[in-house]
Image 1: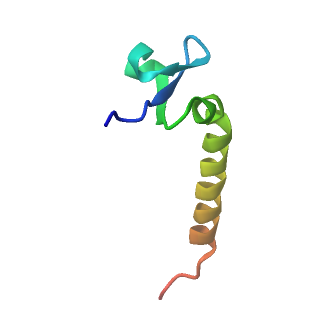
Image 2 (image 1 turned 60 degrees about the vertical axis):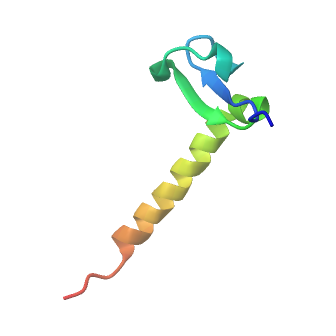
Amino acid sequence: MAEPEQWYWDLAKKRAVPAAERGKGDNTLGPYDSRAEAENWQAKVESRNDTWDDANDDWNDAPEDD
């Protein structure tokens, strides 16, 4: 059984590319499970950043143990 194809966002080409066409690692984001996920990389990054920012706020607002 063949592995499902992975997709990457190519920062230089500014488009989603299949793994077989992937360029240098420092010019790509991924892997993603589908072309649609690769094309929507920015929404995923923003969502993760918001989650991490909220966790940082919770950490910073937590009372300190004396």
